[in-house]
Length: 141
Image (cartoon, one colour):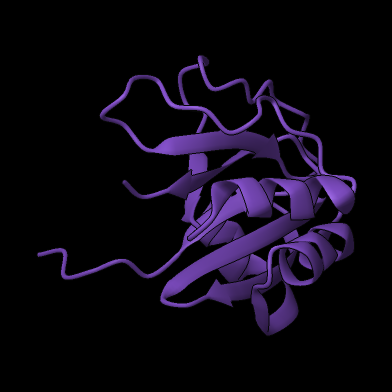
């Protein structure tokens, strides 16, 4: 039976760039980084000749695995949130406006300024990581 969450994973185009973003911009800590190739990882991911660069980053209890496929190379998918299979991560902030301004000052592009869908919902803003994954900041009610 499932007992908890271990990690969430994103396949990225440039591991170093993604580690820099998640640690330097969003405040994650680097847990570990490594490369793996050969029969064992090929069996796990289902691709012959698999060679992966992997980093685990952590924010509180949330653990994110960033994976760059050196081989076999993949292709960029359209990660728009209305596409089936697309995912996003929402992060809590005490002050959505201040966080929005701080991230904008770092050059982060937002899809929207902080807003709410209706009066009884929290204020949120969507932005993107370097590969276009949608991220969200949420200020609880």
